[in-house]
Amino acid sequence: MNDTIYALATPLGNGVAIVRISGSKSENAVCSLFSKKTGYESHKLYHGLIKDGDNLIDDAMAVIMRAPRSYTGEDSAELHIHGSPAVARKVMEILSGLGLRLAEPGEFTRRAFENGKMELSQAEAVMDLVSSTAESQAKAALEQLRGSLVAPVAQLQDSLTDAIARAEAGIDYPEEDWECEIADELIPALNEIQTRLQNLVDGGIQGRILRDGMKVALCGRPNVGKSTLLNALLGENRAIVTSVPGTTRDIIEERVDWNGLPIRLIDTAGIRSSGDEAEKIGIERALCAMKEADLALILFDGALPLTAEDEKIAKEACGLPALAVVTKGDLPQVLSIEEVFERTGLDAVPASAFNQDGLNALKTAVYSFFESYSPAEKPDALVTNRRHLDAILSALGSVKSAIAALDKRDLDCATIDLRSAWYSLGEISGLTVDEAIVDRIFKKFCLGK
Ligand SMILES: Nc1nc2c(ncn2[C@@H]2O[C@H](COP(=O)(O)OP(=O)(O)OP(=O)(O)O)[C@@H](O)[C@H]2O)c(=O)[nH]1
Ligand SMILES: [Mg+2]
Image (cartoon, rainbow, N blue to C red; front, side, top):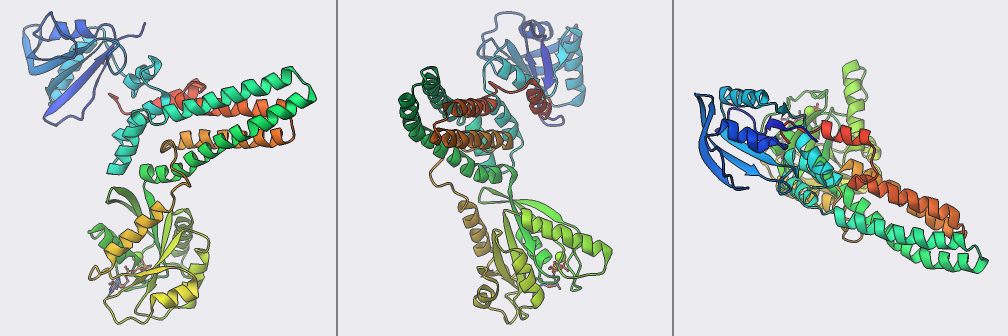
């Protein structure tokens, strides 16, 4: 049987701190240190005193949650104490003295997973929810915690099981006609599975953005106003601005939340040919950031004519998700958005960091780019986790290869592919996942979760 564990679930120094306890000794532990000694109703909060023998430690609340109706599925308890480090330390000392053990990071959630209270994808969603900073991120994590991915994955696995059974029937009775008939019957079913997997992948890109933030890189030649725009969009003087070209050397990244969309704004070094070693490294990083961005904003100085350097940078952005920004709209304009489009092929929006004109329209344009990552059909669920997306991609690859095998009437190969697709999907729920991967997932959790 599991030993009984405890951990502080809240940061210290706040008004209230919560100590979580889980395992068979939970109720006994609470009875030993709390003034109420018997007669606890499950899930009811009691007010009383915490004492160490005769020594009064705190005025507190306690709740017992009996198995299986608890987070971990075991007998559990919580103590709501004052958020003083001294009080918390003393309470934990008493618990340790009662033979309880300090929990490892993520151990409560791991027990919930092992006791069948949640699937692995839901356990991972707990962590995503705890670390979410934007509203949409929190919402996506909560949906997943509530099992949004569980049913679609189980349905896909069921459909695959049916297909495997059909294919195996064909292998067992290997008459020519049978094989053809079964292959013809299976292909439409597998096409349907393929479409559903593809939708999950496409929606997953949007999901990744919701989870990790949309990388928006500010790029362009020196002095076009990248750092000034970053500061204006952040509403603070984060990056150094000077009138000398080549001011920014390293990448600067800051997070903002635009209407619930988490954005990672990235300021980069001005791109030009330079002999300076540090600047050269900065420019390489800038080009990298441009290529890795979910959206590259290519800035052009509206008060100056377009240069050969500008056009060269626009070429680097060719094929990437990119949008041009014509800056310094408060100055007399020499460059129009029409000219930018004609000479670079990029759609452009005008903006001035000085008087804030156009900044809202720019934010709207960024949002439209996010929406353009929408899948063809509404996916069955939003896949926000890289590990889940990889499992779905791998299942998709196997299903495609099974379809190709069926086209050639090769039921043996198709069966192997279908089994491997089923196995890949099982990694999401945790059904077929390696113990080492489970260890790695829970190691990333915070203490007390
Ligand atoms: N009038 C006006 N000037 C601006 C605007 N944005 C930037 N500037 C000026 O343009 C100059 C360069 O601005 P930066 O923001 O440092 O330009 P940058 O693109 O980051 O330059 P590097 O870091 O050197 O690549 C500064 O003198 C700014 O004050 C604007 O919207 N209006
Ligand atoms: Mg700069």
